[in-house]
Image (cartoon, rainbow, N blue to C red; front, side):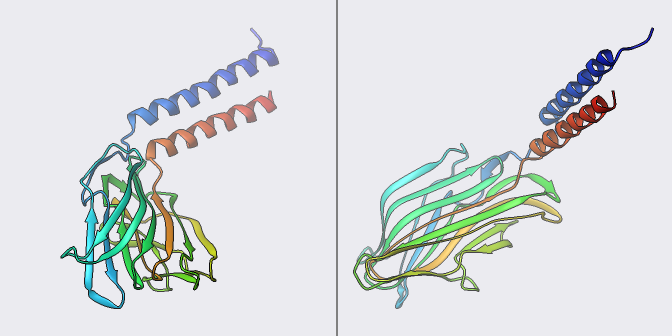
Length: 254
């Protein structure tokens, strides 16, 4: 029995759909990079008077793994003896989830002196990923003058840069975001990324960290995200695309 061109087209359409459905099944069967716990405090902050390193204080949260965006408002960081207010955070946000993703977001007013900050998302741990593709990091900062004499936000990392995307407990994936400054009563923003690259070897954790100095009494805000696509999502996209391409090619021939 001979097949018409319509019969051939329908058969290859079914084959293309079958390949896409198979990709979906593979996405459920394949092991994913589910982030199952946070090794460090979910978010930790260290604040130090840049003119007097003996004036230092910390703030941190408990662990958490629900993957939702969590926020804390109106957080004051004091010296360890609680005698001096070092900084006031309007807001602090963290999102550590099972993509895996490590994200940190903040808005802060420096104390009476130039102030150093280190703000960490916490270490997101997950099942080992071998040679993961398309790891992505991006970050931005904004500085606003609050006392009519200009403002600056300068990274404490080499560059000087303000943001580090880290994996495996401290290996640098990418450093981002150069210094930012503004004139009296002004505001300025700098963004960097996304930076996308493959990571050779085995990866078991990621972390996002800001480290910078903010001028006295001024406002600085930032956002930084480091993520690695979940393997099942990559598999689904690749196999599904291959199925549709195969179907389209055969259909043209039919």
